[in-house]
Image 1: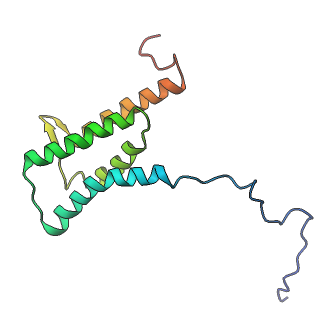
Image 2: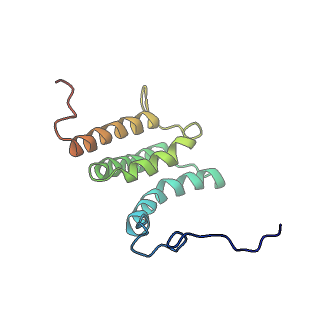
Length: 135
């Protein structure tokens, strides 16, 4: 039997949702631009070192990424978005771009410690009194 395009439809079942019924998907805009701008510095530096073989002196790299880390730590007290975006940028490249900070402490450990601290702070703000080490 050939398809004719006619099939039974219950009244009110097959219709287009109105603008009020569709949930807002406002993830772009100013917050996304600020996150991308923040990530452009380390991303651009990693891109330049990978594509063009650019080699910066170690003290300059430690100063640049130290300032990046301090800015990230300060921002994480308000919003963890920058931390998650930085983590997503760094983790796939962590074997290629090793960031030793001190003996036994590297960039991956610093990201993990900062993400745990951010989670605990956010959890204690959302659930006051429930984020305690002792009962």
